[in-house]
Image 1 (tube, rainbow, N blue to C red):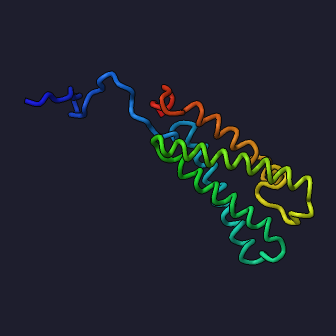
Image 2 (image 1 turned 120 degrees about the vertical axis):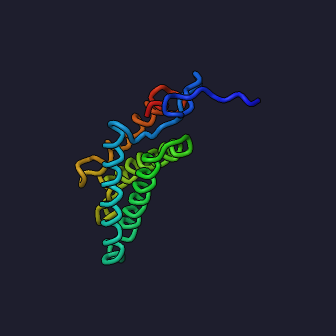
Image 3 (image 1 turned 180 degrees about the vertical axis):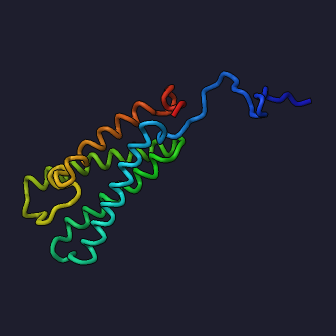
Length: 157
């Protein structure tokens, strides 16, 4: 006869003392983080789409960088909203790329303003967006660190 796991009153398998399952990072204050990333995904996508469709020849590098930023924000939003270790590591990668992009494009736009005649989402470290593009990945990486797999916060959500 096969031994069965203990069950709760609702018939759900009871906890057996092992680690709790990995839960979404998008609970509690994480929901706000996902929402902000979602807003940036939509706004950067709309901006890049419009610029590429109507003014691409004026500043192709700037508009392609805006499209890259949009893609990074979309990936980060989806990964942050999902649960599991694979989504966690994709979140870390996307937010890390975002931070590197903001720092690189921000520095490049200050050192060689002529190379980027039109602003991107990340120009001037995100000054056109109130420096949120500079602060957001720092907050995102901090949140991810606090909710990494294997920690109590990562198991609670």
